[in-house]
View 1: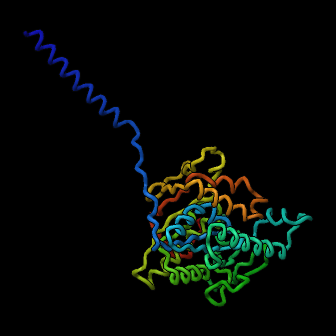
View 2: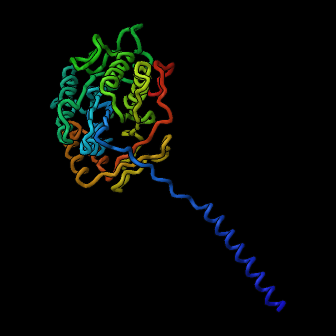
View 3: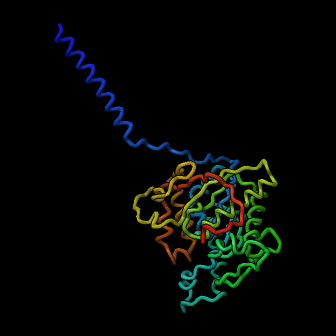
Length: 325
Ligand SMILES: [Zn+2]
């Protein structure tokens, strides 16, 4: 009897030790990250996509824009520049391989037209596009150096312009100054009142993309001062970050390696095969960009699109040092 009771006690202790060991092993195992739900899209959704250049909107959100439209919501894209400072692209379109100010201006007009056709391929009408025509490759200089009227406006070394060429701007006498771009965005947001805004993340390595974040956040601050009850969900997207996502052959887009998912964690928006097909078709409308970097555009047609939420949208421009240039 004594031996049997002793054996039972030993077995009980062993069982407890085993449970403890399994518990600590489970604690060491990486826990699966909770899936962050994509934004809820309804007929009441009013989406605004802030695109530094024509094509960024389709690369980042060609699928999500289709989903908003399919739900009966509204979609609008504001292009901060016409993409008219892309020297390699302009030279590719010219037989003599040269590029004058006239050529850069013509290239911008062509990219505007391509954007309208691309949005039509997504099922969007002419009124979905707004072109502010600020200087391509120059936005980061407007955050600090060319902020206010205290100095002359920025002059594009490509188009030789110092103000937008056409009448798509909302504010009269707009020139290439940071405060003018903030005012344009604030006017558009105040009028349209988007419920969801997509804008590049500040860590995007293209200076115009990084700057787009600061101008959007500054403009939202202006809007809230006038419309204190207004609020909008703001999501960030990334287009330029090291080699991401081009050395990845998977059909799903992974988050950029080494970049955290921001305040929310990475938000995955799955695309159906039909949505991917339409997104690819929209990208083919950007003929100049297909010509210059088809491989780059193709890398964004995946089974998902990814976004993150900023920790804060509190920015007051101008900044003492531009974080983007
Ligand atoms: Zn861009």
